[in-house]
Amino acid sequence: MNARAPQPVCDYTHSNYQQEFWGQGARAYEDLAERIALRKLLPRGGQLCLEVGAGAGRLTDELQAFGRVVLLDYSRTQLQQAQARLGRSARFIYVAADVYQLPFVARQFDCVTMVRVLHHMADAPAALAGVAALLRPAAPLLLEFASKLHVKAIARYALGMQAWSPFSLEPVEFAVLNFDFHPRAVRAWLAAAGMRVEQHKTISHLRAAFLKRTLPYRLLAAIDGWLQETGNLWQLTPSVMVRAVAAQSGAGAAPLAAAEHALFCCPLCRSAALGATAAGLNCAQCGRHWALQDGIYDFKTQPE
Ligand SMILES: C[S@@+](CC[C@H](N)C(=O)[O-])C[C@H]1O[C@@H](n2cnc3c(N)ncnc32)[C@H](O)[C@@H]1O
Ligand SMILES: [Zn+2]
Image 1 (cartoon, helix red, strand yellow):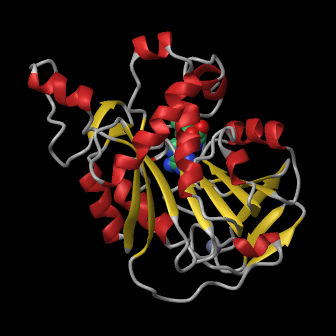
Image 2 (cartoon, helix red, strand yellow; image 1 turned 60 degrees about the horizontal axis):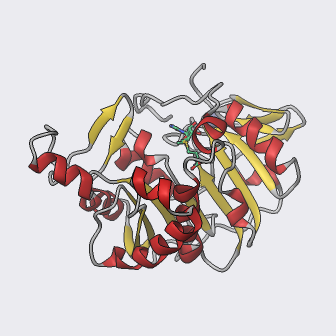
């Protein structure tokens, strides 16, 4: 059994995040800049991609080169919004689960993306270790994180307007369950999870209200796309995306699951012996039932 104490979750259930944060147009520049970075780092294609913390599926349309996409989120209501956007088909698999208790057989995915999710992780190293175990050999993790080491934070610190140091390695929790990380700390956690960072793209170099007011967002994002190339030299932006792969070729890939339910294992006892019914999956080892309702698998072990 998985005896680790549960980590707190920044719960987006019933949140209107997609509409309120992205839908008003004020962050069109950030949205496009993130897409540009993703397009540069994504592999050409593959059978199976996992989006961790997919939310309402804002970025899922960037994953068209994959045969199947698994959207995982803690919040069922976010997944319902994603379903409304993407529809229900064999191409999209919707999974409500906690990133700390991932319900998948190891080494199956051709790519895992995680954008704007790590910044909610109180135990980022544990979350990254769980995600790293899911990748096939040489398959990349595309991880975006909020960085504490950015120009504005450095200036505020230098002017005595901010107590915390942007240079120290520990995370800063600037609001409850909202963390900024030092890029070196993230690299160290990835290394501990057996991953090596191949590439960095720095994102949102031009996140300044006066620039966003005066210049078209497409122009700003295009300039950001050029500046993203400096990411391998230094990282001084509020957002960083890395492409990480397994540092050493270890165990081989898991065989590709033909049946959808064969992707999963029990998040409690880790058994892959799950019997499928129309109502969900039954763990043959620990007896736990995992519901499948309205096209969403529910592997959450804590009540909402
Ligand atoms: C800021 S939103 C980002 C959504 C999407 N990736 C995007 O960029 O539009 C963060 C998402 O992470 C999810 N999340 C937070 N903690 C989680 C956890 N422990 N396990 C799974 N998902 C989690 C939230 O439910 C939310 O949908
Ligand atoms: Zn079980």
